[in-house]
Length: 140
Image 1 (cartoon, rainbow, N blue to C red):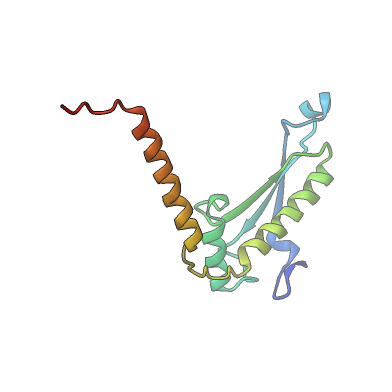
Image 2: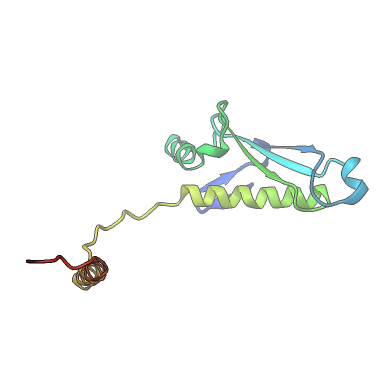
């Protein structure tokens, strides 16, 4: 079981890994060995998550989820497949943790009076500076 948070645990059987050739470090090894690891998690078919959790994940991780409902996490930083696999799993857990946590509602605040005063004073300074640049009007 992969523990995401206190109320969410995902069986390892729901996660699939694929390996492909990496463009990262590895010298000649890069041309022979498939070290890039892609973690695939079928969000729609997962019995471990409630409908509300699935909806929240879909909303917050929209860019990482395919049309088929598969969440994809890729890692190619390391030279070994095992290290990339471990990193992809850690990033997967962090992503789910971030996406499932509650976002506190924003409390609307007023602009402080001092900030308004500074803004108006800056506008007046700028206005005076520009007024000084123009040629004085000739009165007859």
